[in-house]
Image 1 (tube, one colour):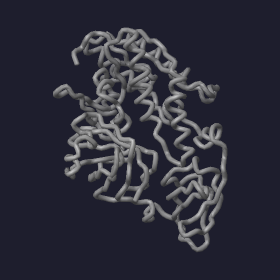
Image 2 (image 1 turned 90 degrees about the horizontal axis):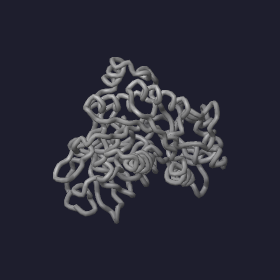
Image 3 (image 1 turned 135 degrees about the vertical axis):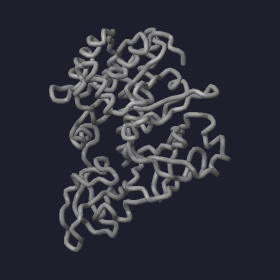
Image 4 (image 1 turned 90 degrees about the vertical axis):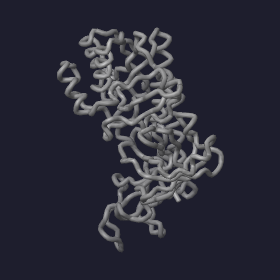
Length: 369
């Protein structure tokens, strides 16, 4: 993509987006910033981090001498991200709202808004790369494997990628901090944000209970021994250790308990002792709802590619890439067999495929086998 002049950077108040804006400015772009506010349901003095983030974004914009605009996509976020988030938890699954947020808010609502405002493209502080070959845009992994965020970007389309820049793709986090210090950016030492996309850090169970009320049920071992009571299957995820409310149990070795399964019909939460318990590990899983970034990698229309065995995948952010094979079952339903057992895959989470540093796309985990 040629540099046409005006580009809109999503300024969040964090150091990554600030350095992204700085780098683009140094490259000769006419940079403008956009701050997004996408959550209004329970803004309070304790939870409304948006006002603090906006103040920092304004300070960054002033320091860089760029215009900063604001936009509110709260309706879009509620309708397209948060309702999905709640529906998945109701089903006993563990969704990843960051992935949906990128797909429909940051790279759709934000992108559309920026284009209407006269920008030729947008940029974010994500750690990822892209490249063009034969009229196809490829999403590539970042230089820093510990910060690579292609897992969260795997549902982007060709159109979205063609109009998006990732200035931090070839930098480590350490280097980004160094650049921020050298440029005296006002947020050079600001802590990275965590928590739910645009909602922030919360006591998760308390937050979720506002929308999905408690529904207590039994906590059992796979053998059927009753150990205690859970507050609602939606409050727990596969592999969870903390917050189970069960301690040492007579007849069991002294080991922490981990969630290994949920049964919605009986409203039962199953747990096992010890992180290495065999019920927490799986070599085979099934996934559907696949999205392929490039036509050539679409395994549904290029079935011959399934014969290849050199795919890699990850089932969570920052997980080292894992060797796997993939087999088509029906429609966009695939079975993935890993070379080594994977710890606690969670239905509702994404599995993302890679080959030779290219992010191919991904699907949503259905079940383990």
